[in-house]
Length: 481
Image 1 (cartoon, rainbow, N blue to C red):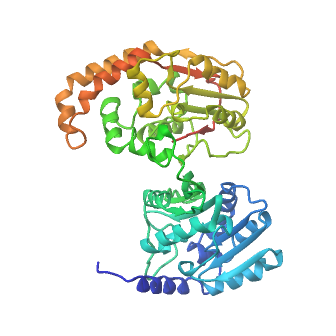
Image 2 (image 1 turned 30 degrees about the horizontal axis):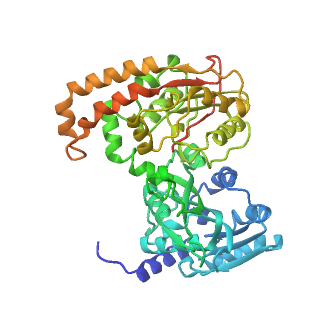
Image 3 (image 1 turned 135 degrees about the horizontal axis):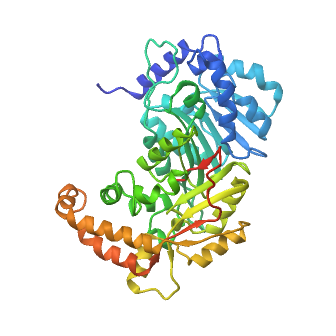
């Protein structure tokens, strides 16, 4: 395919939407004959993911005929609703201008301009996929500038392929992968330095998930939405090894693609934790939970056998918000060692659980100090925040959990890791051959690493409440950091 200029792309998008905005209907705007049913279920789902809009100035991009505008007006201090197509803007103005506190603008978002720090929330629904890569990057930088510090960006896009069944003579839409949006949005930076202080801002991921309405109604998992927050980028913690964000630290240190592939070679496909499926499938397969990728799918299969609905999302548990009393069970495996403020996280868990709900955590803990220099260096390099089982249990009690029970699984951990060490020795040559292109010295670091673990890490389960086999309906929070 030859080079297509930005002007040509913009003209194609204009032509496309002129063809699909003749009557300014919800079917045209959603490009789907089933739009009425979809919007009935989708609206409350999308709105539930937004942060509080009270006393907020909201910019709505790609507002269309005002499906969301009327709801945003009812919650925000002021709404600026922008759309490319005049007929959509006219319809939106006609239906919603009487609600007040709203400015309706017909404009191409690539040519929009607002003063710095104009908005608390930017909301867009099916917009970015109609921009070229260059236009998208430019807009992302503008969005970061227009938002006030701590403000939020919400966007929703069709990924991989089209979702609507509307006939199209041509389709210039760019169906990108979720990974593309993740990388682009989290990589943009905005320098807001002042004379006395250097300031740099970027977007942190709050949540990225599928739109469940499309999963249920159309069996389509390619409708995805994101909530991101504008945060400081230049405050780098020492434990983050110079990386500007915690996520960047994890992605470039322990959980690189190379690192994950090595973990999978040892623990089994889809697992990055000692024991793999043998330590995941516990209590007669009655627990619900997941870790990464195939581990999550294994759990979803187990759940499906019991007619449970499983939803997957990528989110930062320290930023994620759920209504009080949402879940029957909260489960986490070997991830909280990365979280600095465990007390605040446990408060969230407590609020998310229904009365009588259950919490099950497995995590790495430590013995009393002083630690050996080798172990201290290992913890520093990984950026772990470790506590003794006693202190861990105190955290849980402090936030309100009762009947906190700690099970020291060190012996089980040692037996499993010894078996893995033996298996590593048996497949040494295969491991080296398979991973030559990743890291030729992978196996050389394996044995000292395991010895340090055997020396000083203990591996307890913390089921503050144990699972009950007779529970008929469980909602489970899957958390990925």
